Amino acid sequence: MKEITARLWENKMYGTTFGKGQYRKAVYNGTLEILSPYAKYLVDFEELEAWFHFPKSPVHVEMANRLKNIPTNEDGVLMSWIYHYEAGIKSAVEGYASLDMNYSRIYIGGFNYEVQL
Picture 1: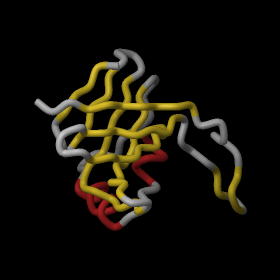
Picture 2: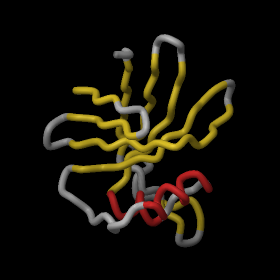
Picture 3: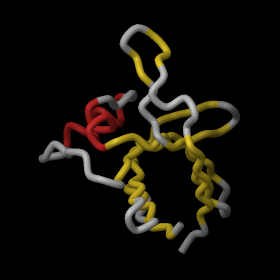
Picture 4: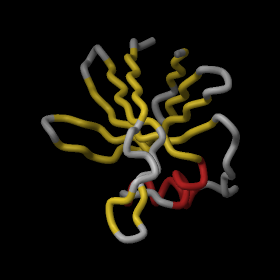
């Protein structure tokens, strides 16, 4: 089992606009770091419906299209697409993360790791 460090922080810009009709939807931002071999991933946790309906990369659009049921918002559950971060470059990977605040748990899909907060 690999050791993962999860760091989350409250998005102080949540709900503000960055363009006409464009709102910041991430409630929490964060990083996921695998220590050996070292890799860093970025996450932006949003409500389920916003996460599903607004993927930003072709990899994530394809993943969303494979889902059979359209997810609906659940109390205390946030989702994020995962981006690999290396040398200042952010690239989408086939994976997602779920933050369940009811049980203080993060599930990282595509990597099959579960991290207790």
